[in-house]
Length: 423
Image (tube, one colour):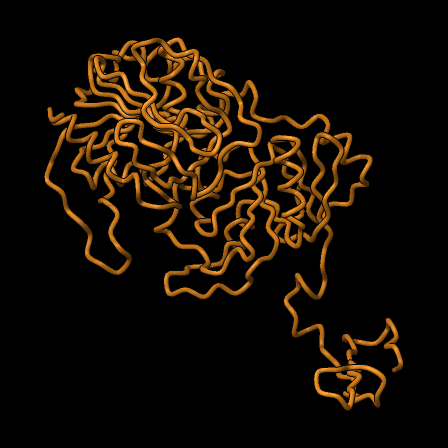
């Protein structure tokens, strides 16, 4: 077969199948030849017709190659992976991912496009996205655009065609590492390695001020309702103040759905300002960064303990541990996924939970009055705290489950009931 010359337009393809006279065998017989055909490159998506290089370089010097999508840009941050099979839009807009380059292990990303209902905030927070394969044409009745369009509008680099299995295995062995995702940018590996060696992870970083609200706001949106259905209405209930360290909108929706009036305060709000809002309870939200670097919020929690029921979620749980004079530590590669089993130490029930965190509370550092209420069944880390005399609890996972299972949704209803004066 004659090879097509590089100057020819399009890609000439053909194949030869060797057919045997014996069923099931393909050897030593006359060939069945199919004529070569011409595939016009103009029919291909630009990402396939004119592929651009992308490289991920980790701080330890490891280099991974793939293809670039979206803008020509460099994303720098701590490289983490999430094993969820769904929920990419919620992840991309989750403020907890600030400062991180996100690796998704799902085989195809982008199938259902993006829409306004699934946003967890008003913008993208990841500094880069790496996937095995992109679905370029979304297929879902709710889709209002593609994930590539969403990321492109905010200048976020996207790498696709990466061997994410090899990358995840390396991160599990080496631990979470800072890195550099260069998409369509002409830089040699030596230059990229030099820059990646200086990349900053999340250790010692207080990122709450970057992602949180700057002033007190009342959350006006109605509770979540299935797309296409009428908006839900709830009767006025207890006022709950959410200390916003990077709160997902799903948390605010679930609190509203459980019957609470929701007021959101910035992490810099002092205890007196929070108490002046006359809350029936306080929630300390999720958020990004190193909990040990967040100076103000543990002091605020310490001042509020015992005055009102308090619930800490994810970062808020870790900050509650610090307020109790406990310590936090960094997990080897974090918990990022929608299938983490945790055991309720009171009932023995096992919940499947959605998680997204790099740090955990050190069980041995907690005072005697703090009871470990839930335990991670994968690595034994603390998943829940309870201090009954102070009406305070913390949970390391995400009960709002966006994305994730619904085992833990009852956490919100129980907390709102406690704020009403129930047990």
